[in-house]
Image 1 (spheres, rainbow, N blue to C red):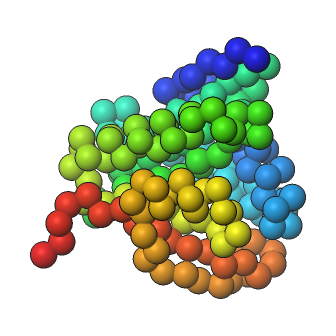
Image 2 (cartoon, rainbow, N blue to C red):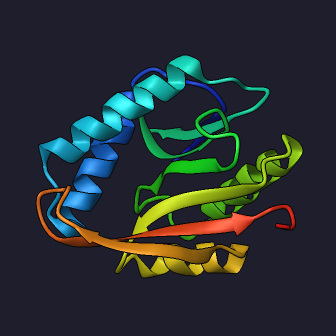
Image 3 (cartoon, one colour):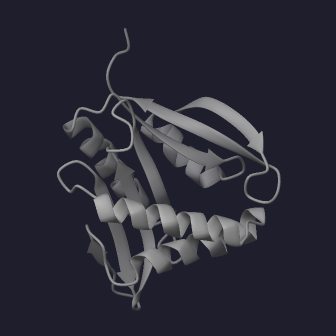
Length: 165
């Protein structure tokens, strides 16, 4: 399958990325419509204010749909860049694309002088945890909540980019 990488919005990106998240997290964690709607709404808001000089967005398109994405939101909080919507369809996993995109996002955060990068992930996502750990992310906090319709443990991971005083 041929894959095209876009560094800005592509037709169908918001819906495809929301659907990919919904299918993935419905299967792994039992998430429902609230989660899918939240992904679509927040991703749409981000893409409308995307500043390519500051933020980063990538999506992989194959067979006419988005099969993977990553975003780095540097405009949300001046103290911490937010890594979001990082997901790969199983057809793209294991090719090194995710690692490359993560490196690009961290590089962008350094380029725009962000003090740190943070992300939220879920307990039980072992492949993601390995990738983040290899990049230097460390656990900042862990919260067990039911905001997604069932009890899950969310983890905030942080990658410091500048020394803290």
